[in-house]
Length: 349
Ligand code: PLP
Image (cartoon, rainbow, N blue to C red; front, side):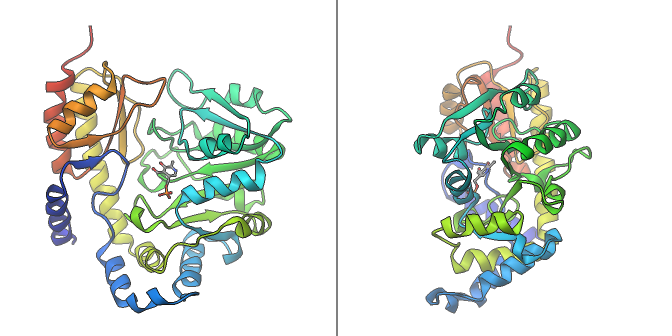
């Protein structure tokens, strides 16, 4: 079991100041096996071309069931979200739902690329009918985040597949699956099979969430070899040796991943029960964070929660009176569940 590890990280989190529930990090950090791999391989820090990187590629390719030439390792998925704009966005427009994870649209706009932001549907999932209509000839790159951040929910699997299939005939499609490992909804499935079928689809996954390696900047790209070949020269920074060592060990540590997923479900249920008890609207979280109607500017909630020792997520316009809170340990979530009603009270009038 991981009891000793859990106790150690919980104590470390308490000692580090306010409990971080603002950036959807993994409260358990890296697996003990990842830490051991890093410690055992520490001498590699002085080398260029450390063997840990090709090894990580192979381990990841095997875990997904694709040849190694379908994989690229990047310094965090943030790096991919940027270089894909350079590779596929410089001549045309970008299409995305909004709000969504802002890495790609923000980078595109900073390059002067036109970004079409389609508001989410009333249930806060992707409005695929409208996105489909906005998929004009001007669009070269389509971004889909599933499960979506900040809304935590998944978009209907069959409808998303049909949209992506159509969009991939008219543009490159990047599907950001950063939260893939936390999904429990049986109707969800990764779109990685579309890559295997040779479609214009790039899948983004990360070491920052279930593997707890956010600080080591290590992420995974799955795409057709010709797409990888176009992206690779744009990448200026591979992850460091330690990210590669840690990620390879963690990918093979399915027990640690299962523990993190299980604890996340526990914490998520505590939050869902607390939010329901306050009579607040929420989305169906399939991630390691919840998104719910606070009924007051989230800055106020942030400030009051900080006074109680918790950092929570920022506002995501236009949902400025909704709050995003990352799932910490179950104990932390019990404390959050006790603190929240004192701030936002019961159901709004
Ligand atoms: N994509 C999504 C949907 C995210 O929520 C995040 C981080 O929160 C990222 C990408 C960035 O992850 P990385 O640490 O791999 O750069």
